[in-house]
Length: 461
Image (cartoon, rainbow, N blue to C red; front, side):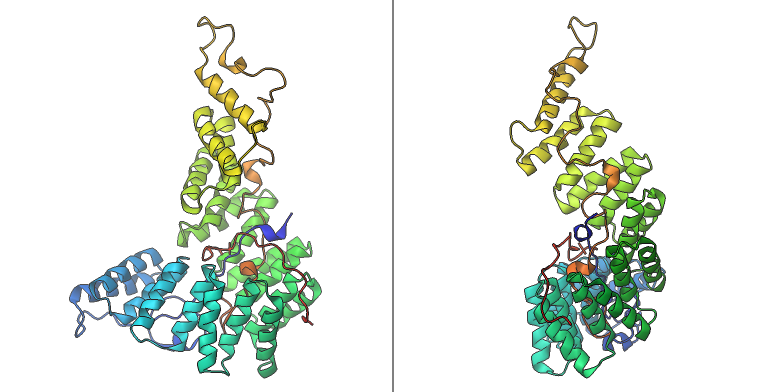
């Protein structure tokens, strides 16, 4: 099994004026929740009403982030300079894995002269999670220019360079933090992730255990410890670590996805389904969770549900070869709908640019001929099952080379992968980039979909 294939989902816990459970160390987290006021001078009542509704949605158990985002969108539309509404909107987007939109919301705040360091860091983290590492670095460096001693910015820079697989630069920032604060947990986690990227597994294990020693309930450290155990082929220990991460932080989707991937590997489809659905309860359009849930549904024999969810995932993540071939096979082999199967096989052929003599093209030809052949006893010599299926044409073989059975884990939902494409927990006290980090993810950004393992970095000692 390849460890570098799945996804990684780094959740954000950016500060907001209300709701959520951000890490304790983020300075903005110390602000009290906004009051649900009915009248505010200079702000239209419709904006205040929408804002209040958003606050109430965030304060639900569990928080209703979709409802909250919709309410804050209405509030900012009614009053474009409603600062606290923009802040809560950015937070809600982050919790939904909509990092590009979160970054746009933070930029609105900056345009309104909100120059708080936390907002700039949150913007950088949202950019990092949406795959814009270079832009994220620009934001983190701007904080460092204003405050050269800021360790939080250095931790975020370490995470960003780790995401770029520039392990040497990442290590430099980690060392700068640890030289000042030897017990800085996010920096220790970043160092562990550097070792993990270099396949120096005993050192990675040492760092994550060290982080847990300083901060026992650090969910990200437990998740990364699980990833290390998994790479060391110590699956039971990996499972225990992922379970601890979830116990300490039920919203840690990367741990849920990694745990579910192991369940898929060991064919425990109901257990995998539970974890994938827990992620989708918060992020209904999380691509990796959608594909994973579809895999689990296939494993439980719910072929119709699996096909439907695979198709929905294509609407979210675009055409992916693994999903196209799998939904095609379901329609052909389990649901007896060759016309639908052909449609997906053709999309797969076009996407992969398969040669004219490829087996799947023969399968498509056979299915099309079978669909137009007269039924037995209608004057034809043979039923549809024999039309165009001459000996040696491969018509009865499984369509497509490399087309694994749908239950065996699809792209982004088969095996645990390195934490956020290597992007560690970026800010001080923020093991998740964004408070104020994978494909997560959520994803993750579109969550990272499986980066190749970086080359051995130098200087990581």
